[in-house]
Length: 272
Image 1 (cartoon, rainbow, N blue to C red):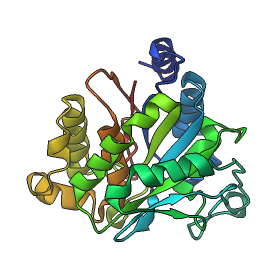
Image 2: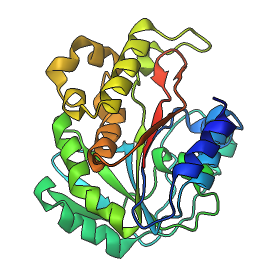
Image 3: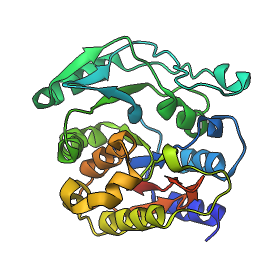
Image 4: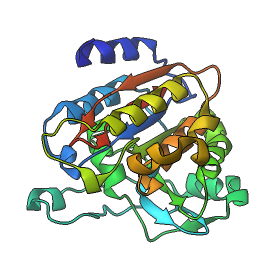
C-alpha cells in the first residue's frame, strides 16, 4: 500500500475524540527535519490524520537522566540543537511551541513512584522538534518532554507508560521518539540492512502486534540480538513507554517499516 493510501486508511479509522492515539516515531537523522523525503512526508501526512491534541507529551531518546524521571515544566520550551557537524540550516531551525506547565506538574505527581521531578532547564531536543515540525508545523499545540531514566531496566519504562495511560482521556497525545534498531557504530551509507537489524526489527513488530510487551522488556530473552540492535538502549526505551500506554481495545498501525543506513530502523507505530 502506498504512503498516501495507508495514511488515508489511517485517517478514516481515527476518530476525533478526547481519547488520543499513542504514537511512536523512528526519528533517524536530524536532517529529516529539513529534508523532503519519505520519512518527513509521512510525518506531515500523519499530522493531518491525527485528532488535534490538547497537549503533547514527548518521550525522546535524547533526554537521558539517571536515578530520576524529569518532567519539563517550562512555559516556553527552548529548541535544543543537540548534534554536531550538520549544515547551518539545521541549527537555524526553531520550534516555538508553548509548554504545558500545569499539566506537566500533574505528570510529576502521577509519576511519583518513578521518582519524578519538575525541571525547567531542558526544552525540546531534536528527538522531539525534528518530528513535531512536520506533525504540527504551526507549533501551536502545547508540548513538554519526559526524560528516560537510564539507571532502570526495560520493564521500568514499560510501567511508566501504564501510569501515563489516563492522560489519553484528557486529550494528551503521548509521542515516543527513538528507533527500534539504533547502532550508529555499524552504519553504512546506502548499504544493505544487516541481517541482525532486520531480524530484531521483525521480532519487535511481531511481539508488538501480539501485545507481548513483556517479551520486548525482557533483556535476558532479547539476548545478544538486542545488544547488536541497541548498544545503548536509549532509542528503544521510548518505544516501550509508548507500548505501555496502550490497552487491548487499541488497533495497531505500522508506518515507515524500513532500515536506514543499514542499522537504524525507522519503524513507527500508532495505537488507536
